[in-house]
Amino acid sequence: MNVNLKKYIVLVLIVPVLGFAQEVRQVSLQDAVNYALENQSDAKKAKLQIENSEYLIQEARAGALPNISANGSLTYNPILQETAIPASSFPGGEQSPDPFIVLAMGQKWNAVGGVSLTQNIFDQTVFTGLKAARTTREFYQINAQLTEEQVIERVATAYYNVFVQKEQLETIDSSYVNVSKSRDIIKSLFDNGLAREIDLDRVNVQLMNLSTTRQQLVNAVQLQENALKFYMGMPIEQPIELAEEEFAVESYLLTDEVETENRTEMKVLKKQEELLELQKEARKAAYYPTLSLTAGYNYMGQGDRFPIGSGLEKGVYWSDFSSISLNLRVPIFSGFANKARVSQADIELRTLQEDIRQTELSLDLEYQNAKSQIENNLIAIENQQENVNLAQKVVDNTQNNYRLGLATLTDLLESQNALVDAKNNYSNAVLQYKLAEVRLLKSKGELNTLK
Image 1 (cartoon, rainbow, N blue to C red):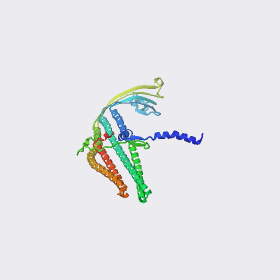
Image 2: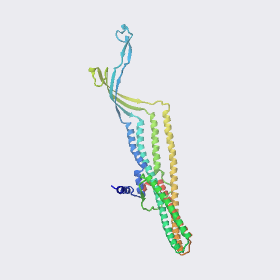
Image 3: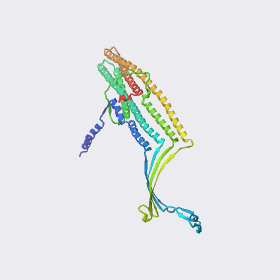
Image 4: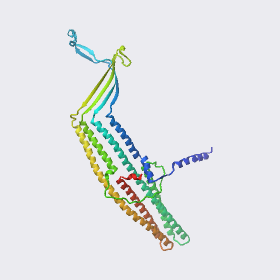
């Protein structure tokens, strides 16, 4: 087969596959958030922690259930221990020429197999541990909610950044089109001897500057999109396109106070406080007595030869034995070790309580700052919108005057630059408002409304 034909066939087979792999995915803010909650590693790990908490409960519950085990041993004694017993201990031993009678203890071979059972009847540590395990499950559930809010915050912030960068890119594209039209007019006038070459050069310089700015924005958009895909847990090579949507600038009911107790961060800390209180109780449980039941049943064979598979006819004697015991342990003195452990747990608890007070102040500060930013950005958006309208009006009037010879090229270029700046300022004001909105929703514990 012809080499070129082979290459052609390979390309025909590969190109559709590549095209399919690079299919652009439309992404709205809600899509981005929900995708992140399903695929982002932090969200997945939070779910795994909840699953793991069930096993922690099972582990703690095991301390209150019977512990049954089987055991076995096989022992060979090459040299048996001997015991010397006074001969006088036996009848007629006084007449023996030897003062001692030596007896070998045990047999050469010993085999033992059995079953043992241990059951805690009272152990305060076990009961406290079970409470702690259940509280740990609740902690991981709340922590998963906090992780979810953090994922939503990161994704929403990245999404708004991409959106505004694209808005600014569209502004540059629009300006490029307008300046190109002006350049075409000036070129036509220049070709007919009605305009100066320097004017045409100045417009070309303006177009080149816009082209450079556009390329910088294209790069910035790509970087922001990569960051967004990273926060979503999406493969970086997957092309995405933001869905066309209007972000409403809404007024919020802003009060002077917010219920910080409803914030997930506070719920996590409060649950940690419960866990540390249980830890302190567990340390105190070392002062309590413990009561347990143990039982065992064993079967033993002993003799001069390998016992397994042998019976009495081969010199191996088998017998069983069993025991049941009730064990009470009462701690009396531990060298103040228990007291030190309780004190350490108390210090950890009081340290966390300070963190709770500090976090409460921090959350209140976060809300007040977000509220101020919302109020200020609403004013900025209104002003920038008026500024865009005014800049557009100036451009329209300047273009008409330029055509009539009543305005200079400098006036026209400056008015167009002012319009670009006004639109970018408006886009930045909207961005700052949306970012402040995310912080406000976070401070009110309402980030889930973005799902």
